[in-house]
Image 1 (cartoon, each protein chain N blue to C red):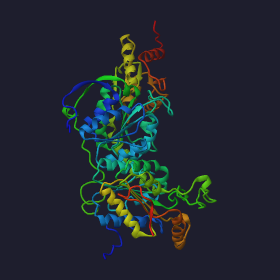
Image 2: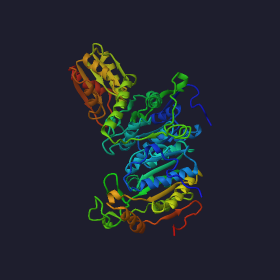
Image 3: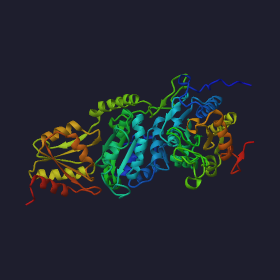
Image 4: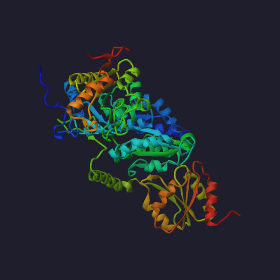
Length: 255
Length: 366
């Protein structure tokens, strides 16, 4: 068995330690993404795009060509690059606010058009960079700065089911999965498959990663893991929702 | 696959939107991103008919935000990408174009102005001057060409790609619904056959070599942590912009020397202004015209000297003072009286300009 280096080769060593808060999930997702890029050996062809929100802190994270865009707009920028230069491998990295709220029309439309790009979305159940407001993914009863008495689904809806929506409208050839930073081996596998799907030109690829924000959750280490494993996993099913060749099959949850 | 778009010069009689599509092809634009809005639709219609014959592409996006951002992605990958819009679409376009301003992206956008505010009319106006010159949350570091004829739509669309890629500021061609929809004769030509060198595009991302090994990774951002960091970046862009103003600013004027009244107009309204000036001058009335071709940057020294030369200035526009604000700011401190003829969202005839000039000069028709 080959041991992974402490840092993926595709990471930029000179910009480490990274800019995320202690305990943030972004570093773990980007470690999985870096490993997937390493294993596929595609660093010469990748263009990595990041959004506004905490994801923007990754604008100099990788040894990869990178574009940091506006809130929710990484999807169309990557679409533009891919349409203009189909040989490039375009990764759009964003948070749940960017992908499911302000940029949801871009997500829906790029799925609908089956854009050959890979969207990776970190779900930490709230807007982190702006100080912890409610997001489409906020859990029922969860306290945020704009739901100080807890999210009332009657008033503001239930947690947004991203991969479920994407797989419902995606066509054959798409790859859709939800992983979690609590299972990094699985998450790396999903990200790798999502990139392979783009390389093979099958269709749109989407991976949501359940992430953590101890700063805004106001949780210590064990509470953070417990929130992910007990609370988030209760609302967000991990697994592959759509794989090329699976047709319109049912959700295949892991375990 | 056809290679050369225009083999030899030829006269054509077509709508302005069709002209823009031909000009973009002649400028070797490679991909258009667009979203339907009147009166620019036929730019897309002609582009989608012509483009595949020349190996070029088109994507109809979900909205103008997406069209603008995808065009930004297109130019970052090293392709000549452009978009076209109008009215409320131009409002949405300001978000991607403000990113283009910050990241110095050579995005070309053609604006065919319609009535405003809000949905208003699909027909015509000059009410998108504020938005196109100064839209976005920045300093207006962009280039705006206001065209008056179909020949200019052709010339300046070609020029817009060159300007954008040479200076790396977003560049606009500002037309309007009249220019978009009416037919007019013009000459189509291959720019290189006329000695116009087409600026070569270079990729921002996706360059040759392995990032981190053969070259540093190409990393572009529009976010800054510190006030000082932003200030330094922005001031460097401002200096770049100010340095190129003398090369960029264009104007057209005639009969300034000895004139009592200067009539200022831009775009299609300039045609009424010029006609009125010609009629008045034939009758011995001392008037002249001045037309800024670039609304950003404005030909400020020339406007200042105009305001020193004449006693009175009449600013004519199909908006309620959008050009007038730019001009009065430029001539601040000069003694010339400022008069206006504002018809927001409505066309202006030479007769109306002539009548207003006579009124100002107290020279009524007998």
